[in-house]
Length: 587
Image (cartoon, rainbow, N blue to C red; front, side, top):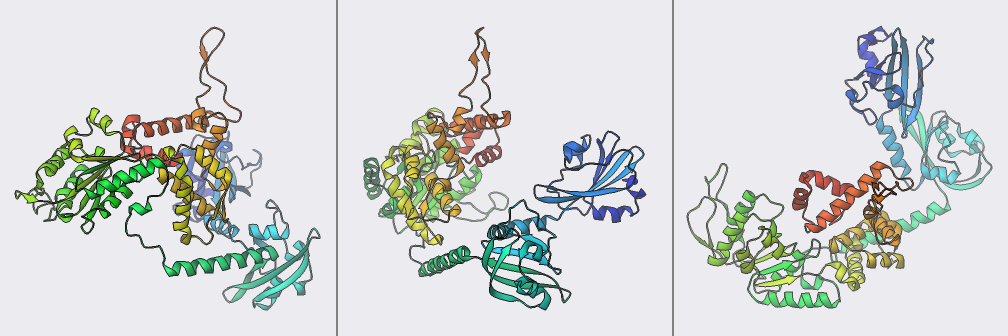
């Protein structure tokens, strides 16, 4: 940065003006890069080391340095991804010094935020020249999004007199002009009729500009409709009907299919007997709903219902939660009752029992057999009267064979075993589930769905629903959040689901499954040669599709258990979770 001192400004003053300073050799390759100490915004500027050694054209292809013989400082500006970038270059004996400044991201964020407002917004400086028009304003006035309006005077944009302009009146008087109906023409001669309101913007008690809001008939009608619907939604929400969650019951398990009704009948019978119950089902089939329902339908309904997710809690913490602790048994420990004491006379639900360590399973077995236990660090034998419910998200016999579930514990805790059917085995329940969920969540939205497009139902019936009911409800949540319509349509569904549907139309293989469908084929010599990439595909996208396919298959093989799948794939749990989120895989 010693070279920066040669500029008219001192180093600190210079670097306060720019975000990054680059030193280039005669071949315009970056040899050094320094950031301003005060430049906190580096949205388009990677770390210094990422610049060094690269050609300027690779880092900033938008910048065109002057020819070698130009010795005077040159400056300019360009736009990258909607962000303005200013630059200054100075010719040096052995290259260039280039200083780059990114426009404050705050301005960009404000502009994009105003684009989302469903009303025309225009901002002018004090002279009446345009500073910004949002997307809605451009649509009202027939101005294309790539047309530059900045710096153009209002009277050059519209065919109207100075006295007739709402905004110019506001600027000249320094007072707001509210809800004035104006008929005028734009620069192309198109007739416009809008309701306009302009407010002056002051700086140091002087008019610095004005902001104008405009609406045509279409926007006014939409605003009336939205406000009426919003008012009704607020009124209905205030009534509080159906918004208090007090746990699940059998009445909330929705569906009329034969397989579901048989499962419910067995669960109801299990609830009436004070025995341990094992619920077996894939992730998302509603195992906790069944557990809470069994508790509420049992003679222990007035006792505590406590649930523990065995897959989400470390072994030592899980043990202390179950058995409780004695003060002094380990650093920081206190006398604290565990779930076995808190739920005395009630029910404990052990979710994903197959994820519990074998050591802890043996201690749990003793509680089931003897009805006694000791707190961690304690010597006193305590009695407990707890009913155990447990769940397993895979075939328990597979878990036993792989030494992840004790066989003796399985037989103790599965006095009755209830197998929950996956959603793909009960497609006739789809409409019931959709109607139920849209009804109970309607209060959250100003406009909720009251109809489902037949194309959506067709897709739902043919989709395999690996995440079961939980995935279905996630899809409905997504659609409700992105739509402003009373009809659930295909365009409101998550992208991954539409890709799956497209895959089935193309022959039954989803996008991820097709990634390697055209793998090596034998050539004339009998040797395998890689199949050609599909049109428009890149190696990166094909590898991504194949990775997605492997992850989906591994998750299904491991009962959608993230920890086991990560071990199977040789990944850290956090790394697998990142990829699950990246590919939109829903449980």
